[in-house]
Image 1 (cartoon, rainbow, N blue to C red):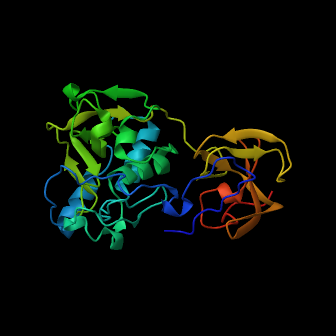
Image 2 (cartoon, one colour; image 1 turned 60 degrees about the vertical axis):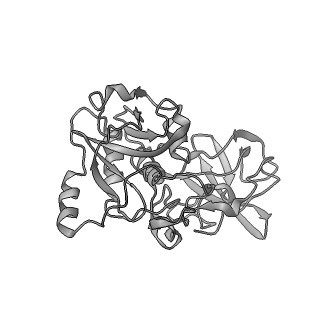
Length: 309
């Protein structure tokens, strides 16, 4: 867990109640989020070197027809093949230490395991592959309003393409009950962070009684990056200002955590809050203004690799 981003009451009217609870990428993470082990099979042994090589060969888009961004999502998920499952672990930036599963069992020591749970693997793949910022929790991801297509459980895998997300719930008719999510590879295969005691693996799609359907994240062939570096913000009501000054006019307000493109950063007004201080501001070309780096979700006050304005 990195040092939390600094907050500033003068820049935003509503701040997260407990920024120290933000794990990895810093999104608000409740202890119950992103459970992938519930209702799944007993933990399977870690794969041998031979089986890992076989899985790596399988972990790629296995059908044609998917968009470039969807195939990039698959490649991002497959890049984590073999990383341990960790309950509550992972972020859009990579594996993190998880949380001890309250029910004990194989997940009772996951705070010592650096890896991903199911929803954070999906969140990582969507961000790294297509710069799509999904919400926390498999049930929230299953209900994501940005989906470009949805597929019911009765359709099986027939209409699916690589990069689609599959999900399972206690009551398949209620997406709020979803407890597991995975990335489709094609030809009846998927890549998933399945449960504690296993590693990210390629599996056969389980069209069982809990299978609840699938959704398509993107059908775009446009590369996700248009210059600059991508970050996310945190907090609500964060103001984007015309200049790197606290008294500069507001050009936009970010309602909540937002994927942003940063092209440069500069020194501006010094911001002090909660024991931290920072005079670095980032320029967001898509919003035409600056925000204090306090609201950029990164452990460094001065963003590495971003040029000076």
